[in-house]
Image (tube, rainbow over all chains, first blue to last red):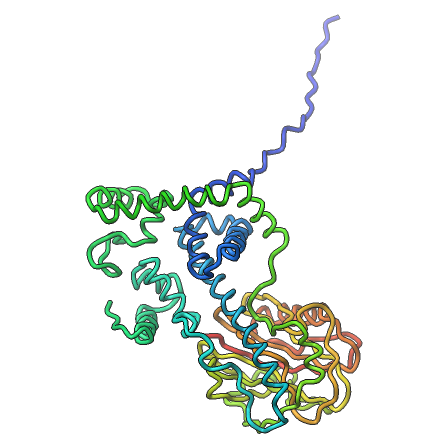
Length: 181
Length: 272
């Protein structure tokens, strides 16, 4: 008897798409950007151990926002901005701790007086960067260290060119130099 | 985009970041050609490029990939404590209990917004408790006060201290939310709330607070008669934030179900 056989089809589950190996991405970041980011952290923190920790934090952020990071026109510019911001925050935090100790001592000695409490100690730091506001710090670093143009610094910081120019002029005044750009 | 510029250098050269990007292969087409041509012709930039290549080799010798990768993966799993927005410091809780009460002559808020009227009210004084924010430049000069419900624009470097007074023992927690919807427990740093003693005058929390980043940040100070868990306070702020669809200027009063003892105070800061 000649019959007709209908082949039976069944769906065979395929291999799931291989997940991207984060180590491959990380190796690429390491080879392309490791020294630059580490250099920025070491430049600001003046401590290789702290700089290595900070660098790891910066690359962790890059991995955690990998899609957005890769979509950046310049991943290195993004990394340097994050690294600069992160290190300046660390420095401020360290200074705050120092101030905190000073303030505690001052409070312990103080009577209940009506004079508004002094928030920070004057002449707390003599380093030039520490004498400026965070935005000026970032502007000065990106301009003088990264050698970015005024336009590039303004774009990176989300500020206008005149604002960045003003910040850099203020920084130059602190340094006792003239700023021209 | 002009990659070879004279702005930051004494002559027409590629800036440091431009050379680093070139080394990392971030340029293509004409931009790549322009820098490749320049580094061929310009001894200074060619030397800098060689230094960058050597810098990377040295980096790889000092910090092998396995060590680098392990550290990054660890940082992904366990983020280090964020350095920003710390009230500060070990022993602060004990310190607060004995901190000298400071009597301040408080001036009216410089620019109180209309937010409290729309959202149910964050008055300066409620049921024997009050709060105030004091703002000062980094130098300590030009201090000003901001009453609850106030709004103010912070200048670069300005820092904030929050103060309170309470007629009876209270539990205190401070939480903030920024434009991105990020909610932070500012005080205490960890879980729970802080038991504060009655004080007739304004007592300031230890250490000052610098709000980093840009945009707006709303800071809440809660005083409660019963212990107030920090996670619950964050949740209440999160729900208020969601209800206002992220508009920090229109945030309603955070709701603590079944907790009539929680007194909220709030300030809105525009970060420089």
